[in-house]
Image (cartoon, rainbow, N blue to C red; front, side, top):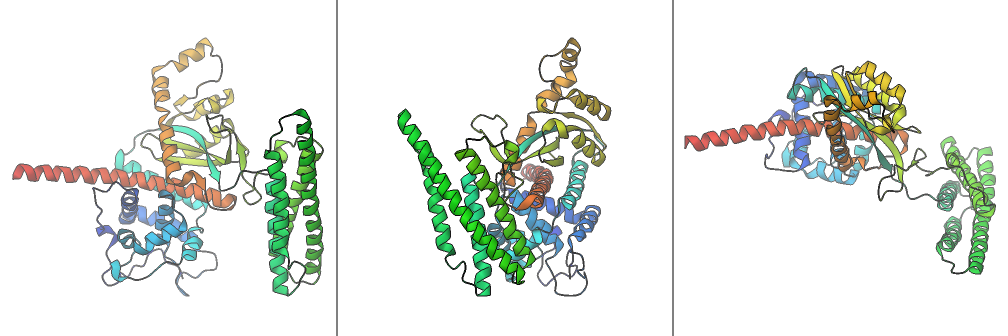
Amino acid sequence: MRKTIDPQMKLDQVDISTIEFDLRSRDEIPKLLMGLQYIYCTPEIREHVFKILEELVPRGTDTNTGRPGMLLWKILVLGTLRLNCNWDYDKVKEMADNHLTLRLMLGHSGWEDEYRYPIQTIKDNVSLFTPEILDRVNQIVVKAGHNLVKKNETLNARCDSFVVETDVHYPTDINLLFDAMRKVITLLARVCATMGLSEWRQSSYNIRKLKRLYRKAQNLKRSRATTKGKAEQKRNRIARAHREYTDAAEEYLDKAKSTLAVLAETNRITAITYDTIKHYIRHAERQIDQTRRRVLMGERILHQEKVFSIFEEHTEWISKGKAGVPQELGLKVCVVEDQYGFFLHHVVMRHSTDDKVAVALIEATRKRFPRLVSCSFDKNFYTPENRKQLERMLDLVVLPKKGRLSEEEKEVESADEFVRARRKHPAVESGINALENHGLDRCFDHGLQGFERYVGMAVVARNIQILGTILWKKEVEKFQREQTRLRKAS
């Protein structure tokens, strides 16, 4: 049984519309909660948001009968709070159990309500969100924010991209091989122990043996050689260490394949576990092949052949040329921000560059927000075709050209409108920095869909906080006017 919100209030429960916030607080939580309160207390917005949230209910779940699940409103509150405050699930649970104002927003009746949230329940319910649902919620939040500032005003946007890192370690071919072998041995040992088989009873010893060989190869590579003769000896020792390491890994792989075949023939392993082990075996075989080709045969491995994490396979090696940041491991995200600081749209870029997503991104943004009339970019988005297509969609396109300018192009880029928009463009870096400070510095969810959900939730949470900040400023101004009136009256 699933409900968006419980219509029947409990004894001593405080109505969400009556929750008050400390206007002197400078923390981010009250502003986010004030934005959520506005969504809940505005009937038109609440109706649209709740209708979208109903799509979170898994198929086949009866909304009226059965054991009650977490209210959909609570899922939205906890999901946005996690990303906006850049917390892990342990912190979310602690705050949901003990933060009074947050518990009132979740529908609890003060300190007398002793309900405590199981951490796995929070994880399972927040993960019900999809990027598509979050995108639709985001559109409603942004439109609500626009109605609070200036209705029916044209939108001027700024577009830029940044890297959201995945939660992975620095990849080398030998440590990726160790990761794959560790998973193969651990999973097989677990299955054999369940079935009462003794083939992998020494799995812990096997992993330690592989780790010693891995560390030996790793440490030899880090050592220094002072003379030409010693350099040759070092290369030979490195080659020998890598050969021993890959040979040992290959022996364990052969044993793993034979064990897996026996388990499959006797139907003593589930299809999911079988596919998972085979998946890690393929990773290990690839890493053995690449290690031997690179170290023993002196071959250079092409970039497109490399995998940078066996757990987060969507991870890319990104070099943007920033000072002090030679590379980043993750995926690029392109965002479109308006003049009020709201993020109108975003896209996760896989195997793509800025110039390839510019037109499609603005076209999608225009469908969501038809009042968009201008957008500024940096030079990475420029191609002659991009400029032509964008000029058909927008009244003003601020897209500086790479390289030398013709006389006509100099005239275009020196126009007053172009120069003013160009000067305002760096403000998008402030918005990106705010996203990174509120959860988007590194993604801690797993898989590509988890990554896209994480990014979408961060954008929604940030926009709700901006909505709350607008309301916050209005309340502060109202409070200050009241204080001034009282001083004059006294």
